[in-house]
Length: 113
Length: 111
Image (cartoon, rainbow over all chains, first blue to last red):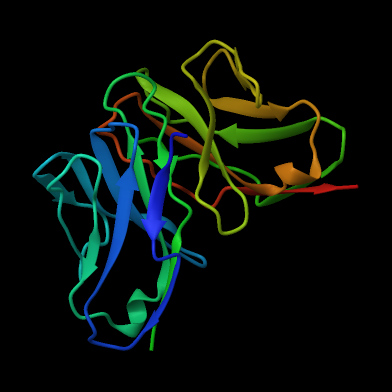
């Protein structure tokens, strides 16, 4: 089944404790991205990647890092999480050609205390 | 990308057609109209997209006005599982182009 998976789905952590949210897709998509969703602010893009070893900042990149060492994986790294990074996070992927339908993962709900 | 305007919320009876409007008066000639939906706290799901011709797939129909300044997403027989936030997005058809989600329309389908 074609899908985007994220882990963990839920995470409660404390300020300053480094964490990584993994994202993997099995559709051989070139483009991958991370969004965060907050009440009243909608979905905002954090980082995106157009292919292996190619990443770029989205609208709200501060406090986040990403890497794209393999085509299928696009982890989101929070080196020193803070409470304002409490949010619902979505990973997404799509092909660069064709209708560019973007496939989203199930989401990761992160709480930083 | 052009901005869109959608009603904040709409109601629909189960089994009836749901017609969700979207205004995009500043749309450019190379921009498509995309529709996504998000069921509560799940990842958004692609529904349909089009340039200027009407489009239909297994989920919905998309009607775009001749001047392309507005469109309507039609769910022909709404079910309770169609309750979701529906997003109308205007963008070029490019895998490099970011999806910019607005506030969308909250569609509530009732028995």
